[in-house]
Image (cartoon, rainbow, N blue to C red; front, side, top):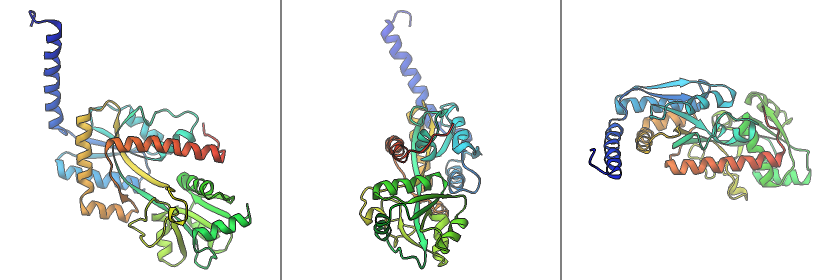
Length: 324
């Protein structure tokens, strides 16, 4: 090659590199894949990682290992995945907590949810139910709004988990009402207060709230997803109650470390979506309250940026403090 011009030598080197890389991407996966789960065992998200991982193993013949790294609002596992080699063999099942809310929740976040990750696909979301006692005078969102506007600051809205609390703040801002937010550690404590009329309404996830509705202990007057949930199709959305565009769900999605080659991301996307098309997988996820929703890598990237902006506005409007 010594008689070739520098430009031609560069082209030939690039061609050799691209040919080798193309062969590598076609062989992917050729060894076990690790899914980092920054969620506690038994949660819907952690279960999703294991169910989807098992199906990918069946489809590709390569073992998928779920590496549980819970703690610090998902930060521990998320940081570990961001620092992994960008070769497609380590991915993370993240959420709108790790890739949206944490940006506003913490004063110093040790990762950048946009710059440090390559989006793969959303896998689904869990909506929240607006719950009240069966004999409550509130039978719709409008019943609550009318009462709250007539008596500012006298009604109460409970929630569990950070997403539930922020969903309540978003609802208060959209509805223009002044109700007292009350955080609960368990849905059981909230149910006790709902039944005894110490609490007016409560926001909790479908997996936590729906069994209580089906058991006749509570009634659900709204769901927080943009469209009616296939899991509870008879329950109207908050958007339907006169607040178009309202949506607040706990979504989960797969990400790879930044700089993971696009060809590898595309293969991961194809395998994950393929797994989610399995009726068996969809049924198991539905049993945990997760409604399957997939996306392109580009759509997921747009979702992350939109979520960061959305929750930043909620934090600012509610004057919520940051954590160190």
